[in-house]
Image (tube, rainbow, N blue to C red; front, side, top):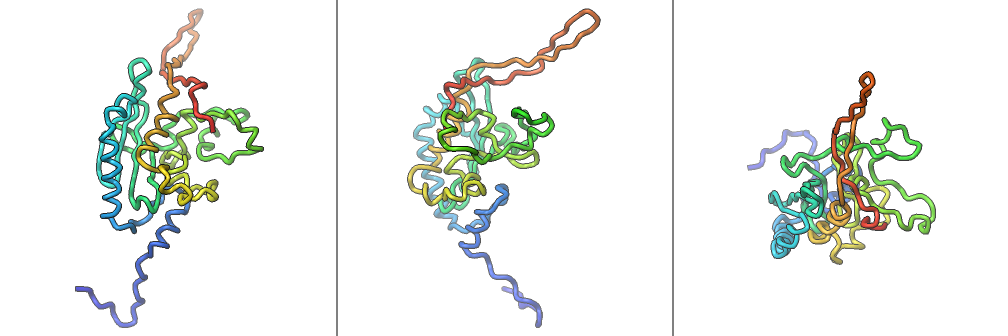
Length: 254
């Protein structure tokens, strides 16, 4: 039974319409989650269809290092390994959220594949850029507006670092067409989701392929990192870490 508000009390605001929810979903910052406005049964049917297609090809995905580690409607969490690199490292995890699919594209955020905890920009190694002081490097994570004629940008590759987008205190996300974060971003207002919807972009198969092509396929080897100390007349080198090295010829061209 609904309680009757006291006389003279202001009327409660009406529930948000689907149009309001879409407008909210199109706003930035990207971590804002729209309320659920698509019938969950419809979303569930589409989610189940995407999951069934994945399971039909799960052996193929496993050979490419893609493993489903958690299923909790409307999200799927995957671990991405590099089986072609010695010792087969687990490189990253990604959570794909199908809430309001496919009135909205899926959301793709990077997570710890073991705990499921979201990764923040501060968890990434710094990305050195010419002329930028090292303490300021991390503030440059995020979609960068391309400058100059398009012809000047040919041959620019997407590195493993640049696929991870997010500021220090923000969840890291994947910014390619077909993800909610890409189509929400103010730099991409001219590339509406509805220009891609229904054409294979933003499906689970497409997203897993993009994460593999940009994330693990270009990896080839390890680059050791040493700390060197001078003690008297002795030079001491200590191995402090390993970073995965990328084959530049294997990077996608954007």
